[in-house]
Image 1 (spheres, rainbow, N blue to C red):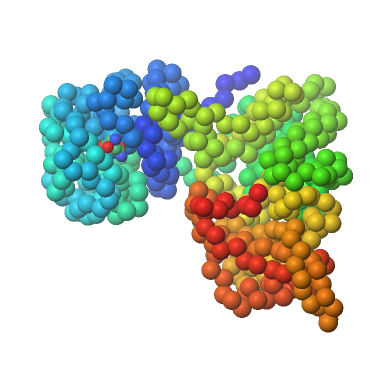
Image 2 (image 1 turned 135 degrees about the horizontal axis):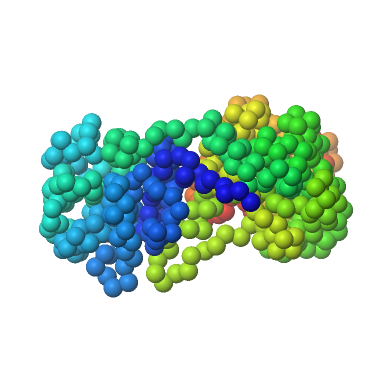
Length: 525
Ligand code: GLN
């Protein structure tokens, strides 16, 4: 197979070495915001094994103390690459420590805002940066200047808040420029990447499409074929469209209708992906198979497992029916993995903890001897959305709320039956329709209806009713790690409740979930 260029070989790349700070991925994020491609790797990365040459290196912050026995240290070969290096917080302390300066616990921890005093206005890192607010998060500090370095900035508590080498392009800062609380942090990062490292600002989705299509073509070769599951969600649709652009009919998309999709979903996906986007799509109706297996099951974890396993089973069976034109077997499996999943699996979790590997469709790969193809693995969610729009995917789909793999099965609490799924599905449809009508869909990160198997008494048309409860959930979040419930107007909730009780048989009562995450999760199961 021909060698496949890595994205980091095609685009000028800043290497971010992660020492485990909770902000490390934000460094990557910020650089990409001004069109410089950046990739994060664990701090233990051996430079000789990198396979590409970065334009510059950033050493991130981290929870350790450089002087501690088990502290992680950078491969010193980064300093022989001949490219600029910037140390942030732990990264600064690491640079100082390597260069023989004393780093120790400070008298005062510094956490939160501090005012930066730029001492060396000619330092290219601080070009256009004023004495502004910066965000600190450290307990250790430099107690002396490493040899060959000068002070470029201070704060009241940190006399060595910014340092730079006298002759080499090595810089260190004690604060975190990647967090938005550092008001001019982005200017500083841009100074480093663009002015100091001379990285090309060509990381645009237009360029990405071009290089990625080329990369897929080379990887797959002239005759091999690829399969992939689509769900109607953003990631799988964008990945499938990209594959179609690259290899046309040789990409086979499969939508498994598991019986717990949203209302009319299978038909909609067929129309939008198949007819609209020209994706070579097969829709498999396996609803009975899934629902039969779910009979009598109430435990959420069991439901998830059954759906996951049945999915693999059905997908494999359908994939076996596809006979590639080259007379061989299907060779690749498309997976819509995004960069946050990759970060999660590679980010540095410390000397004592093993690094978590990510686990998407391991089963399929093993059973079917497929090679994995992940065209979105370098992208953040908003980049995927932008890519989707450029590929001509409808705005509504590109901005769709996330939907869980086990679907409505985990939104019907208790046993999942056809009747229960139908109630949850219809209530959800009304709720989302009203949210869209009110122009709130894009303000909310995720919204859905849950069916609670609790009977409650009602009265309709003078008749006593004894029916179930629908709980509505809507949350706002930036990362889904924490979330708050969305503050709807009362009139909105009133209208939705009245429509659901009137239009959906089997519902007597509607409630609104006002719990944040934590302590609650986004989904109910
Ligand atoms: N652990 C180091 C300290 O406490 C570095 C902290 C950081 O990188 N945020 O100073």
